[in-house]
Every structure is written in structure tokens, then in C-alpha cells.
Image 1 (cartoon, rainbow, N blue to C red):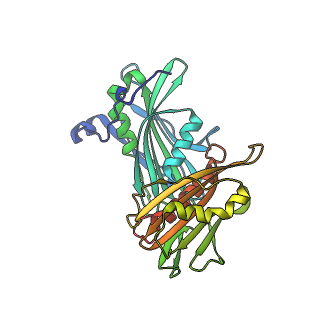
Image 2 (image 1 turned 30 degrees about the vertical axis):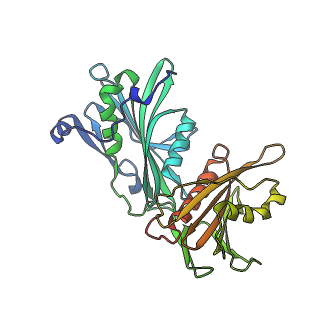
Image 3 (image 1 turned 60 degrees about the horizontal axis):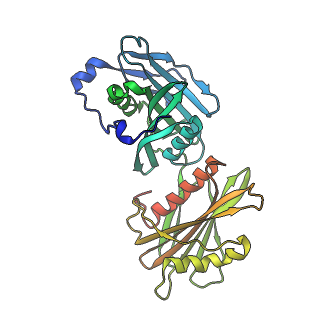
Length: 360
């Protein structure tokens, strides 16, 4: 693999081609080769790039189904380019960016550059990668979108990939961007999440509210400490329902720090888990401007033989006089990606919507 820097490969954010140029050098492909209308799409391709596969085909080892493969048919006349459209149907809510990075890791792609986008349906990514195939280095640009299923529960996560040889990338970089950026679903839904959301609204210990994904079950736990409110959230992992998230709310009588709140509530775990309270670092949540402060930290939870590895993540912060302390326990992404991604996204939705229903 070549040693590279981002500056070696341009990463255009938008296409500079004029409308007249696009009309002369590109064509719009309308895909309806499957009975599922949720998979019908439009994509803009260079004139020399034509369909070679439109029948839904499983991609071995990735869990994806390819629903479009387009290639330059006369590579001797114009630089070779290839475009792929694939999808995976997923039942639980997660970030499109997390899913894309997982797929790229399975494919052995090396990330050169990337940018992320945020919306109410989560985080998305636009990624530039490279990968060696024998002696040839291929440069690829990926985009991910998701759309709630109209014919089944969950959502379809779409991967759009455009690739070319390294030596041709400088010439084709905008063509690759045009192909992934002008991909649209014909029957796109307004709701993009894999699940609907439920809400908690309470007046204790102060007015508080938040959303959470509908596949999670919530229970309000009894606490002996006056003024302390505790909710636990459970989800099915490994065919068993397990409590993976704890939410505590309080209004301290005196001025406190985030580390003090964390250390105090973590004491109940120290003798059980044999780990110390994590050292917190200040964090930023751009989706929830109502948070006056936010701190986070994590500790590893491993079995003696390290066969089972989990990570406990803590979020501590305040909204006005209301303080919160959140715990989430999850496996590592490389061990059980789908469980990790679902837990991570649920915690994000709770944090993003805490007393802030305008943003998720």
C-alpha cells in the first residue's frame, strides 16, 4: 500500500460541471428491476458507464444485496469507472455512518478522507478510500443513505460506491462525486429511521422529557435516595433482553461537579464490577443546545479470560438545575457490531432529545 496523504487525492465537496456539460456527458438511469418499490432509484452516470447487473445479487461475506452494477464498457476509449449500488435491511435504528464504516472495514478499505452529515435520522458519511487489488490501487468514493421500509419494519441502508484506478482519479474525481451524490430513491419516505420513537415525560425531580427507540423497554426503578429518579432501558441482545442503559436524574442541593456526580453514582458498581469510576472529559453535543454542560468517560469490563469484553460509557451533564448521569454497557464494535451500534444510537437519541424535542 502506498503511503499517502489527503492532499494527494482531491476530495471535491460539490460538482463544478455546468448544466450543459452534464446534459452532454451524463445520463440518468432509472432502476425498477425489483418488485420492491422501496428499492427503486435514480442515479446519474457518465455516458460511457452502462449497467452490467441489475438483478438483486447477494454479496458474499458482507450481508449486502447488490441491486446495480455499472461499468465503463469501452475502457480503451475512456478511463475505467465502476459504480455499485447495494443495500442491507436492518430492523433496529443505528447511524448510517457507523454502518458504512463497518462495511468498509469488512471490505478491507483504507479511508483516505471523509466528511459527516447530521440530521434527525442520525449521522451519515461521505468517504474516500483506497484498496489494492493485486498490483492495482483502486480509489473509491462511498455514500450512505437510509430510508424506512414501506413494505416491512426497519430501514434499508444503501451503499453507493464509485471507483476508478488511482492514476485516473484526478480526472474522474468529480465524475465519482456526481454518481454518488445524485443518487435518489424514487419512493423516498419522510421518516428515515429504522424504528418509531417513544417518549418519557416526567415532572420529577424537575420537568424532563426524552425520546427513545420503540424496540427498547423502559422501567422506572425505585430508589431510596430522595430526589433521585432512575430509569433503566433494556434491549434484546443475543436472544436475551438485557438492561443496557441506566438514566439517573437529580437536582443537587449544593453546587457539584460532573466528576463528583459520576463518582458518587458509580460507587454502587465498584464492588460489583471491580473497576474505578472513569475520569471524565468535557464533550460537545451539537444536536442539543439545551445542554449546559456534558462530560463523558468510559471503562473496560472484561471477563478474567477476556473472552467477553464490554465497555461502560458514562455521560454526565446538566440542563439548568437538572443534572443527569447516564450509563450504557455495550460490546465492542469489532466483536458484535449490530448490538454496539444499536446501543450507541439509542443513547444518542436520548441525549439529543433531552428536554429538546426539536432535535434528535
